Image (cartoon, rainbow, N blue to C red):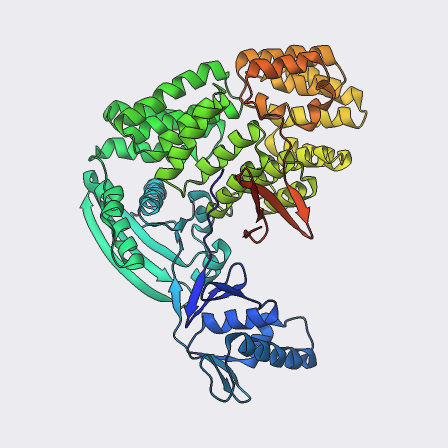
Length: 610
């Protein structure tokens, strides 16, 4: 069963704990009924504990759209309800003091439970814009080091990079990322030395909890990052356990030139473009040529080959065997490298179709680094490939918890809902993803597929057209557009897409599953099965999960489909239906506790209940 992890922002006072993210109030661990405006008033007072919060400030914060009369009545009612829940009184207040005609003040001691953190992009103060990759790379490495130590929700790189050179306040950033504290800082690289300044900031009180400056030789940069991570962890947790301290220690020193090449490789890998991935291969290869024992560089190369195959840049047979050797080399050098276990899991899932071993690799990766959003995402893909849709959605949601502003992961959440048969929710999530970056074709592509699964073909066609325009007619998106044209009866448009795809095959690798998609849409069943058989021989990564999507519905009653399923080697439970359902206005998933018990995970409030 997939593990469910929660990271709320919690404030303690007396026997109470207020979770500002879920909107819950607990007393000695038991839930207190307090919702809506009374809880919002409590949250506003807690965020400024010890300070006067005026009635006008509360009106602007909570009752913006209401009239003055509604506000006066509403505020008085909310304060009375709040005091009732807290066992407080206006005459002898323990928690909320009234300042007549002015406002209110929370007077009890409030303690914050720091459970989540974001390392904001470090500023490049080297005076050379070409060294920007150093600042980005060290930011990324600091995230990895901090995530290893304490049980915190640590936001992934994609989301925090949206705040590079931002003018937003720390409070705005913290609320957008839903984190308790922020790490800010700067990097200066000069004359083979690196200087890093870092500070831990409480965005709600605007206090600096800790700050320090470190100056080291470039060869000591990995050790330096471990020291910074330990300092951050100590100021969050007061002290580290021996196990946490051991996890934060680097295994070996790194050659400065190899490390620099590795940072450049990760910088270009993050672009996820053809040119970016080619540059990533160049720099990761340079890193291992300089330092043949540098494990992260081998893992970076493996990830690059995996991503190149997923984007359809080359045949899986050309990329995955090499990627496997690289991941295994990384693990031989450092068995504790979470990213290498994640890479191996992806290879076993997407190419070898060895789902048991793949799951073991992902589980190990998440044991070593529970904050790795990509590991959660790729594990979700594995679970959906074998039709364990309930668990797949949970892993996708955990990936989004760790990378809340990533368009790809937000769209992926919608994709998992689509595969689980929750079409309305899939469309809703994909629309939110597109809002994050309307110019990214990936979001429109997943939204098109979600509309198609819900038989909303006009909307699917529109989104597929958007993806094609924004991508410059990338084959992956052009195929979807051709299929959607077939769905609305535009046979000429679909055939044109098929001919164009065949023409492109002479110069670039085109996945056979793309031909299968178009043939199925056109009703050319024999040709569809020929293409699916070619996809099986190519070990196309998208084949196992794609078989159960809408485009291949018409093929499933054919004996050739069942034969293909047998050859792929799905596990015995592959035909199990999703247990996702809707309860009231909330989507929930069944999670088997044992053979006699089932609990439910609410996918909106993230709570478990019988």
